[in-house]
Image (cartoon, rainbow, N blue to C red; front, side):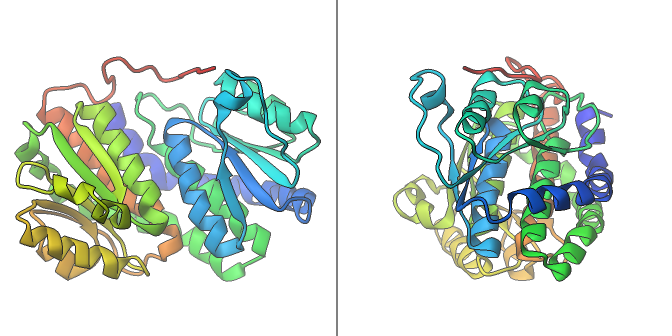
Length: 344
């Protein structure tokens, strides 16, 4: 059994631990920053940047707060940091080590802006630079590909969003998310052997929309780094604006289609792809979508759309792992990658 397999299945436990240990801390942070910002600026790289994409929809829909993604090179390479008036500046990094992310937080502090670090290493440079720290509580992550620190970052953002609005119903839904993640992992087991079908795959497309635009990017990243497959992420809307020309028999589409407002658009796209002869791998709770897919990764019913990225990413993580093994690669040690990546 690989470390990656163990860490994927550890995620429900991690999320429970994070919520149990960090809720009071995040309440205190919210008390400190509420009313002191107009928008959120997030600095992140890699999987953490995909968590930031989730935050754009999360805070936009649930809090009606605009979220911008920082361009760290402006702060470091070009040394021309923008004015950050009105910003709550958040750095997301599992290691807290990357100098460019730390630089954004340090500059925000210099400009007198409220800052939050979301990290798995509370003694890291990022944590030291920020006024407030949320501990991901994920423990050591031995596999190079991030899994549990990614979903923990999603949960930390969901907790921050929920406590900013003091929404008791959403807090209850968030606390129920680990059980839904456990159900998803159980439902995914039968599909693991189907990855063998794609052992010669060299290209694919991953599509999601809304909250799961982030999921498409994160699954594509996992497929790329674990399997060396060129995996291109798109929203279903952007895919129709040209890239749909890629849709053909030798380029399968992994469709992320949980329940919610984006589901109907995804169902229509899957139907259109079937007419084009495109092979679809579907992650969904919708029987119609699953029935039309060549490989189906079912999701449990009753998952709130705003929390669906916590569960929808799990089949993608498992697919990347299983495909790596089918190709004869070590899923714990992708070639060319290290656990901590530091960029300037």
